Amino acid sequence: MVLTYRFQHPRQASPGSVPLLVMLHGIGSHEGDLIQLAPYLDPRFAVVSLRAPLSLPMGGFAWFEMTWTEEGPVGNIPQARASLQLLSTFLEQVLQEGIPDVPFDPAQVYLMGFSQGAIMSLALALTQPEKLAGIVAMSGRLPAEIVAEAAPPEHLQNLSILAVHGRQDTVLPIDCGREIRDYFSRLPLRFTYREYDMGHEVSPQSLLDIQAWLQNALNERLESAR
Image (cartoon, rainbow, N blue to C red; front, side, top):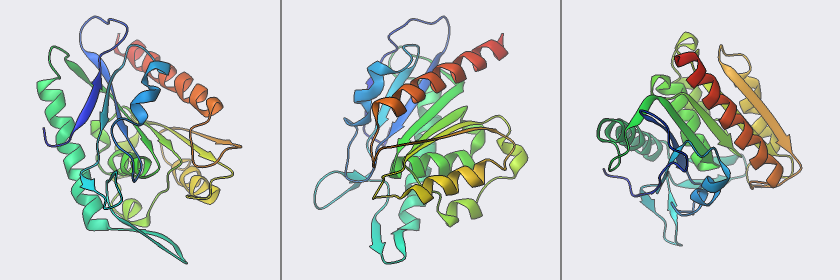
């Protein structure tokens, strides 16, 4: 598998295939970042925390390079598309092969992305929704290029999405979160949006809400499969 990752086995045994939570970090971070949240999340999940493919000169990794302009952040779209293909291929491989002795349930794949990782999560959900049960998008944004390539709305009906954002975010301001809210609220899928008095971060309250949302989403999916 091309992408480097860290893996945590499910902390609670489940019969049959295992639900999978894939974590995507933000720009300048690494695979050891978000996985620190894994002990606080539903113990039935196996967790894979991915390292983005691009190494940055100042350290850390990125899914695509960014340029900050007076009009706002501008991403390298060809790099983003290449990273999205790597992510898609990784999911296909890991579902086919498993990770030693852990078979994953292809109907129970969730993404949890922060900042640039949230952008990637939203991009995969919109363009290849059949690969996912749901996503958690933390402190992200929705570039126009993603919207332009979105699958038809009826293809998104099985998705569940939680978007969270801080009102004091100075990296991706709250307007970015509200644009995500306004766009997804119109689509035929299960969408939840939350704002918090926090910056560009994961606060204790947002983590509690993420924990509850993932648990409920997993319970609903498992119940409907019976």
